[in-house]
Length: 82
Image (cartoon, rainbow, N blue to C red; front, side, top):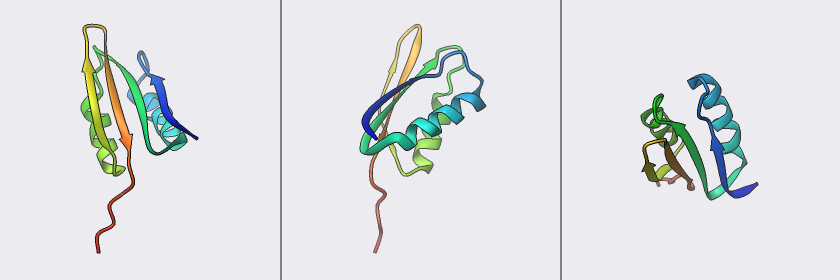
């Protein structure tokens, strides 16, 4: 497992991109970061943001430039409420 991984999912359908992102996410250690590189045209940023939050993670940064969107998902430990 690694602390930082990058996955370029430009040009893929949402379902294929989601499948690959899920696989890569499992390889990232707790407190690690998965960087997703997304198509500007297809921009799945909101969808992956919602997915990350549902996994107990947070978005640490979003870089938006004319060619692509870079989304950084921080895999933290889930909060355990007493």
